[in-house]
Image (cartoon, rainbow, N blue to C red):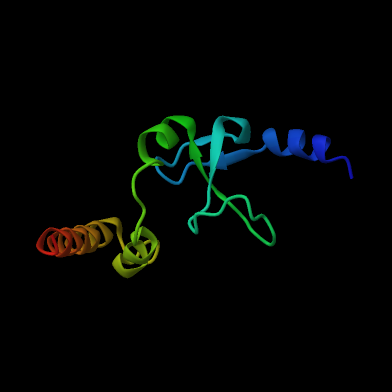
Length: 101
């Protein structure tokens, strides 16, 4: 298989940004690996961020983020419920961090 041609074919596909929900060309997006190892590609599928969201959000500390998203019910509860739960969990984490100093 000519990997160069496979890459170009993938670049033409459209993907959905997980931050803003916009559909963009794959070439206008950045890969997001929630496990933090985008270089290990074996048996992996990636989510994507559009370039503006990647620049704005991608570089913040992610320590515990995925666990917090799951605990808040990401993708399984309404947006309002998720946001309330997430805010409560983030407040608890901040209090723990602040009190631990």
